[in-house]
Amino acid sequence: MLEKEISKRVDEIVNEKYFMTYGELASYLNLSKPTIEDRLIKNGLKYYKQGSKYLFKKNEVDDFLDDMTESMTATNNDIKFFEKLKK
View 1 (cartoon, helix red, strand yellow):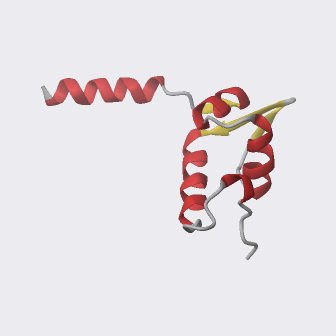
View 2 (view 1 turned 90 degrees about the vertical axis):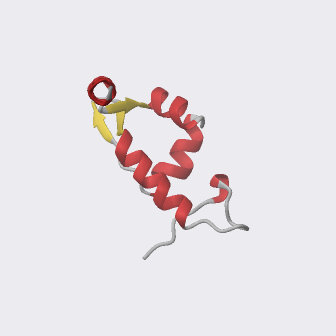
View 3 (view 1 turned 120 degrees about the vertical axis):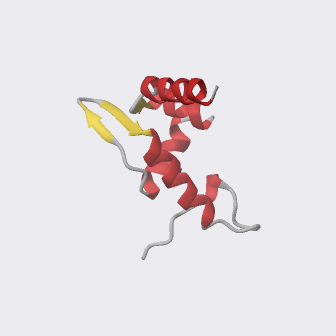
């Protein structure tokens, strides 16, 4: 049974996309493209360009959002107004 579950998870990982397009990212985060541009990319979300297409690595998006939310407080927790502190 354990081997079956491990095999199933390996298949899921293999089928995951390495890069997401803007549309896939917007759907994944449930955010609009302007919000992604204005609040995430301007605050340092990494992206890759292929011609005119922007691509995003899912693990980098997750890490960025984890870092972003760790720096939020109870009174400063709105992504709309978030700005990464400059070091």
